[in-house]
Image 1 (cartoon, one colour):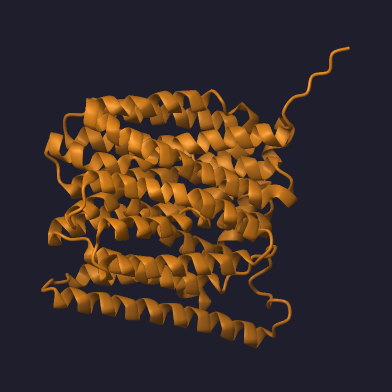
Image 2 (image 1 turned 45 degrees about the horizontal axis):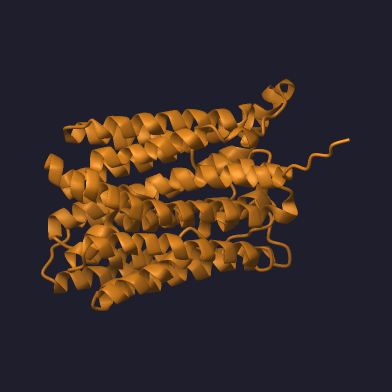
Length: 464
């Protein structure tokens, strides 16, 4: 009798999730490499290209709760395949574009819809459901790390393809890889029984209602929006910033690849640490490190060595926030409706990404420099670090009940102090940012600054 030994189910699930993440996020990470060649070829501004990517991030974010809800009800594989098809269509439209409108439709709307289906929210929710709880954080970290592996390999390859064949032909590498990825997602189907579909829909709505009224979940959304701001600002604008300060396109591409390489180790390490230490405290440390490094990016003269060392440190904390944030959501509400809950978490991420990509492009077009935006990124990192110290990562509790071990008055005082401290830090940081800009002879539009402050502090209202 012949005995056949196959791979374990967990191995197959992880392999499918890791490959899909590597391709989806790897292709997405190359967008910054296309900024300069597309801008030069089509004669569009940095702000116009930034708007296309900002729309991509916004559509990506708005689509993720919908994609998550559909995957919760009908299974993840169908959503992933649909996302892959839209992703491919977006790249094809971009490759044929002759105007800003074509780039906006291709890289903005269609690619954004594709990413909503073939991205973290759906993939991580599926992995989280299919992997047992004791291995969940490590599995989420491994899957996330492969997004950086795709970034590490695809950025230099894409840069070489653009140099040799032009930006249009280089898009076909991404198209081919996405097509292969959509054929390999069957192990992630994780479909609920059809007989309970109506009950699942009702329960999803109730769970979402509870989550959006739960202070710790809302604070998690606030913190993760800062992550979106950071990741997209750097991923899209770091190459252009390095060129602005005198570095070559090779160093710019190498810096992004370095971020991807070091994030593999950083994310894997966080997966191990997340099973042993408080996830919220680890997140506070990660955001704090980001804030310090971003300040150094403009405070220290930028040489090739400084650029690569800074990129290595950024890489260690780059996507390490993703498995920790995802694990906290699973701890709070369980895996059954992870798709829609992850969807809203990643929606907040993409709102921050919209501001990070479009705002930075407008800023550079207006002032010819990214320096003020680096200071803003630093300020937001420190603010996010403080916010995460006041998130309860345990199972959901009614917001009307005090935290175990604390009196009601003490718990309310702690929340109020947390809101006040984070607000003060952010306001002081914005003041320093304004002072620096005034020192450089720049003029702020008061209404724009006020709008930024309102957006930053609206989520803190429930804390008082």
